Image 1 (cartoon, rainbow, N blue to C red):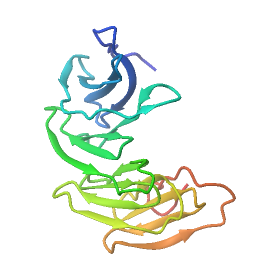
Image 2 (image 1 turned 30 degrees about the horizontal axis):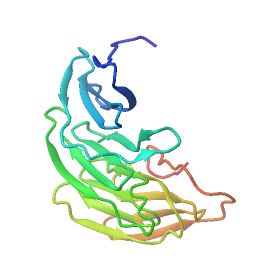
Image 3 (image 1 turned 180 degrees about the vertical axis):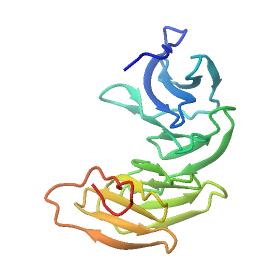
Length: 212
């Protein structure tokens, strides 16, 4: 393991809270917070360490009481051409990481307790995103923003993963099931049950034929 770049904020009042790395290795997004928990996201070049752009229009973040840090996650699309900023209040905003331009905002499926977005995933071609609220799941087009709500889980949805070919989506939940969805048909095709505990994590194998 070799250190390629050291990237630090020039302002002492900013504290690092998270990051996202471009799968192509061209940029890294740094989430930082000031003393008022106002989020700041800077995009830096991996090659030079220099700041490319600072994202504007970030929403005020809900603060996690246990750590006093904003509930925000950064997720890169598989191709590295989009960066998703996901807040605990249920707002997902897509940005171009090289220009800082916002491409489209999404709001997660409404939930009874208004806890917002819990899980988020890009499809392999980044033309769709999957967003979950409490027990509901919504597939949204990144092209026109068209949402396709689905239902099926009886508990909090914990994680999502698209199949490598982008035709299916699997989800885990506190209802102790793993569910598989056919995206083209917009329906649930299989329910894996019998787990003794909540299902937390799930991943497709590279061939798309197996789940872990």
